[in-house]
Image (cartoon, each protein chain N blue to C red):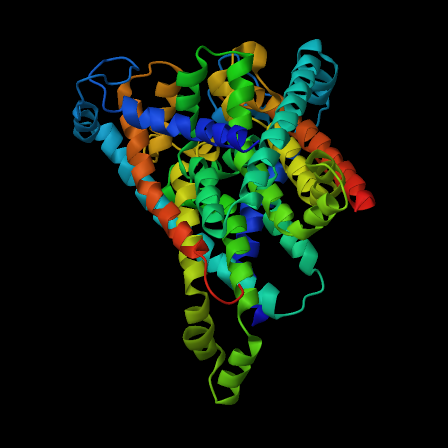
Length: 254
Length: 262
């Protein structure tokens, strides 16, 4: 049983390992490097304006997505955790809906809407679209953390004369800052890796890294795609390290 | 004040979720756009102002689309079955691991989810070879197993292991203790994972598109093809509406069954 579980886990990790290895191949085809390893594909990546531009677009859109989704998810979580609302369950359900909606349906609708607005071809439209997917995840992380905060601490600060902003800035925020960081990293990862909505909404000026990889993946696959993939992986891996730090065993209950 | 806190996400939800869905519904009811030499782009995709059920008639009656929905359902069932099986296996490994081992296992299970889906599909291509049914199923299962494993692991965490030890002490074999104690107590996790996996695999897009031949194309792939290649946005919208309706009904039924079992 246990051995079979590790076999499945190994299989899950193989695709990632393979694309890392292939990115160092000297061959023009998808072959594992045998004796010779090369950085030629990485040099080609950074020497190509198309790929570098895509990397820049990806980073801008990811930063905007993290800013939008974490601030609005934090505000929503504060409201829904601390206060009583009549339609609380409905609010949460609506907020989490994008997690289960077919992304092509969302993408088709967004394309039809965005095409009619000045946001078409703008980084903002992609950042908003990515935020629709990032908010549910950010919300779940922040809600879990806010529920752990003792409301008495906030009440004590209010009793000592702090205004609502001061209570948030000096009591609540410091207590949930690890969750804010985790939510930020999740939002960055979601945006950097998003392809379905991007496929529908990106124009020539807003193509992200996954969008430039996309046609290569379907037709002419070269190890350059593997190198691009590894660069994307290098951007998102710090998030996993942070997640591990967040999950580390601690004394006391969480 | 507290209402104001809800404003940012509510606005984004209205603009980014509700409006697109309303547009999809409205587009499914337009007449097809004129593709013969039309210069104005908006008339190319659909004819604004018209009301028509022609797209639904096509999607619901033409054998091509019936086969498409049939294949999508079969794929979803195969993928869900395998995902739950392997997900339970991994979830159980997490359950039985030491506290430190648990964290290492959870991170390793989540690691593929932090890698780009295209990197992942690319690796699946290298392992499973040329496009076809096997790579599609393998790819989708591998994409969904981490979610199922973590959901099931969370449910198993709530099962006290001394209940299993008690069953064993009273003479149950390890297999019988598993079937009669562990598995029933972890069913809430399994059913939650089942609902999510059915919804996600039935709207599979990237796996079938990148790892499949046209014979393995799903409803979601056909939506993309109609939007980008045939420029027939009304058919794409009708496919989306029917898909969402089916998924909604499936989710409703499965949650009702889940509540009854609980």
